Image: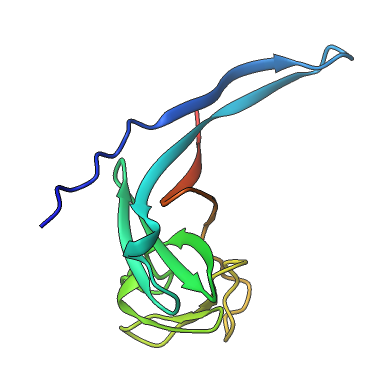
Length: 135
């Protein structure tokens, strides 16, 4: 068995306050880029769970595109990565609530509900998730 690949520490990209040219002050969130898995860990049509500093995140591979979204169903907190993935739709295994993994929007009532989504990047064999942490 090959040794597990070392996961590098997260990269903190931006944090603090920025002043725009017209002297408007904008508070920025801390942006973190975190390696969460190897590409081979997530074949097409599958989902996995990752923990990013206590933040539960599900990853889904939809026809080669990797999506990251909050792993907790908004209904009663079921683990979405344990649910069913069909195309861009994930279904919670507890009570069947469904969401679009690309947009986070609920598909069946109540349709105003959303789960958080996160930007992803692929670099070589590594999958990265970008998290904007609140101040």
